Image 1 (cartoon, rainbow, N blue to C red):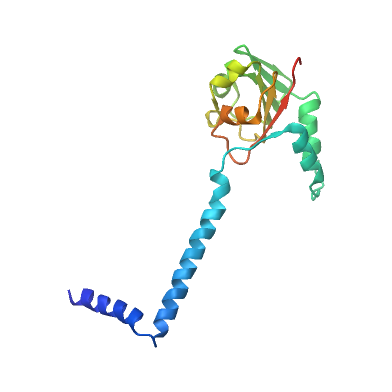
Image 2: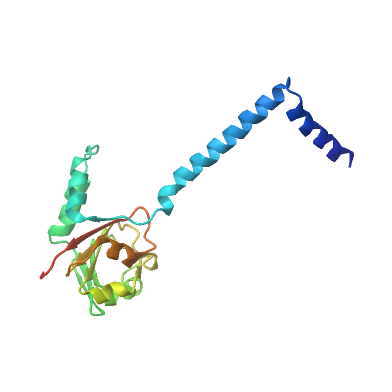
Length: 192
């Protein structure tokens, strides 16, 4: 009981005694705590922000403008190659899987087959890009959960290939639980 009284007395003295350096130290300590807390919240903010989906051509322009620091293939050239060149691939369409080549780096799936990806793909794979083919507005009605495909450890890009006119906001609502290290890109390819 005596300790509690002493603590209350010390606390009162801290604020009532204007000549005390303790008051200054307390204010400094409090300000550091507040600053540190707001900094940690700003660092965590990108993780909780909503998903940003970028048109593929805009993303390639952005990648090209970045300084190239390594001797490896620049990221924009790798993405262009994944999108345009023939690559070892897995096609999962109409709930049927077909594999072309060894160590596929591309996966193509229609929306109706997406739920089978986890069970149909090998556990250790080199898949870098997942192309989801969206045929009609009806495909957007049931959102897909990207976290449900846990066996794509090297996945970098999720490419939404849309076959009709739609807005990025609609695509944003279509994708759920996307990791922050995945880039979601899209292209509207009517008639393709």
